[in-house]
Length: 567
Image (cartoon, rainbow, N blue to C red; front, side):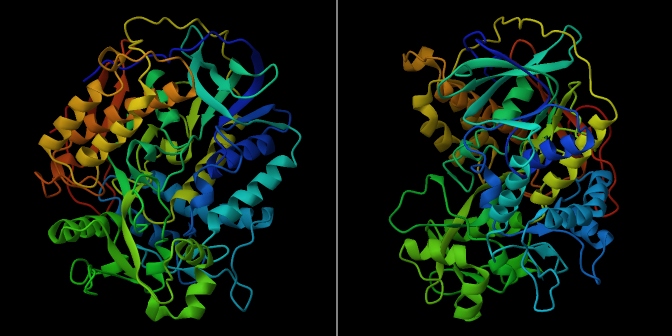
C-alpha cells in the first residue's frame, strides 16, 4: 500500500472562528443535525459549513423517498426484517431497531416542519414500494422529487434560526485535537472575498461530519461533483475507525444517454419506477430479472446490478432498458414528472420508448464507524448520513433507508450533545512526519476514476484489485508525473479521492467472498466465516491497517466468525 498523507498540505490558518458545534455538510443529515442541536441546546452557537451552496448536496437528487413503517398494516418489525435481509448478515440489529422504531416519528416531524409529501385522495400519506421491501412504506414528494422537497423544508427552517451560522463554498481540510486527542475543531478553506477567504480554523467543542458520499472515485456515478469522500478521508487522517468501505452500492438504473460519455454524474432513474411496475429488458425486449430472484425486478439493488452486468457482458453492450410504457401516460407523468422531463431533454420519451439504463456508483454503505449516538472512535467527533457507518445498512442498503438514517441519527447526535458538550483544550500543532506524502496531482483525477471503475467497480477479482492497488500507488504521484502541485481545492479533493479509493481497494481485496454489494468473481459465494466487518485505520505515518470484527447475530442470517484476524 502507498503511504498516504497524514495531514493535507495547506497554508497555516489565517483566521479563526469559534462555535460550540460545527456541522460539515448540508444534506438531510447535516441540516437536521444543526437544527436538532439548536433545539436541544438553545444557547449553543452552531456553525454549518458546506462545500458549495446549501442546496447542492446529494439529498436533492434522492428521487425515491423515505422508508418508514407508517401504514396500519406495516410495523417496525417488518421494516427491520427487510433491512436485515438486504444487509446480508452485516447489519447491526440494535442500530436497525433504532432506525425503524424512531423513523416514523422523524418523518412526521419533517412533515410538521413543512415538507409537503404526496397524499392520497383521503388525505393520508401516499405510500409506495421499492426493491427489497415487502410492504408499501415509501413516503414520497412531487412524485419523484422527494429529496428536493426535504431539502427545501429543512433549509427554510435552518435559515429561520438566527442561532445557526452558515459558511458556503468551504472545503474541510483536517481535524484539530487537543493534547489528549479530544476534538477541538478543524481547518477549512473558504473561497471568496473578505476576512474568511483562504485557510482558516474553526475552534469547536464538537464536530459533526455529514459530508455525504464518495461516488466521484468512479467514472460513472449518480453522486454530485462535491461527493469526493472528504469526511471519510479527514476521519482516516485523524485516526478514526472506518468500516465496511468495500460495500459500494451501484444503482442499477442510471440513465445511459445515447451518444454521451458515461462519465461523471449520471441522471438517476428512480427505483420507484420499478416499484410501479416498470421492467428491465434487453434490446430484444426479453426480461432481465425473470427467474433470477423471487422479487424479480424489485430484488435488492446488488442482485439487480449484478444480473444486469452479467447480461451486458454476455451481450457485449453497455446498457439495457427500463420499460415503463405499459404503465400508461397518466401514471408516468403523475408519478415521475422529473424523470420524464430529464429523459425527454435527452430525446427519450418514457411514454413511448424504453429508457436506456446502466448501473452507476450510487451509495457508500460504509464510512466512519459510529455507535447509535453517532459517536466515532475520536472523542468529540461525530458522523451521520452517508459519511457514517452506523451499522444499519450492512453489506447493502435497503432502498430509501438513506434519508431516514440521516434524520434518525442526526437527532441522536443532538440528544447526546445535550447531555453535556465536551470541553477540549487548545488544539495542538499537528506533527507532520513522513506521513505527509504530498498532495496528489489533480490532473490525474480522470485516470483514478477509470482504474477504480475497471478494477473495483461492480465486478471485482484478486487480479483486478491488485492491478487497481498498484495503479493507485502511482496515480497522482508528482514524483512520476513531474507536475508541480499547488495546495488548493483541486489538489485537496484529488488527495481525498486517492485516500478513500486506496482504503476501499484494501478492504475489497481482503474480503474473499461475495456479499451484498461486494461481488468477487473469484469468490462467487457468501462465506459464513466472513460475516463480519473490516475496520480500517491510518497510523500517524500514513499507513493503513485492516482488521476484522465479527458482526452480531441478527436473527436472520446464520453463521459468524470468531474474534481476531480476518479469515
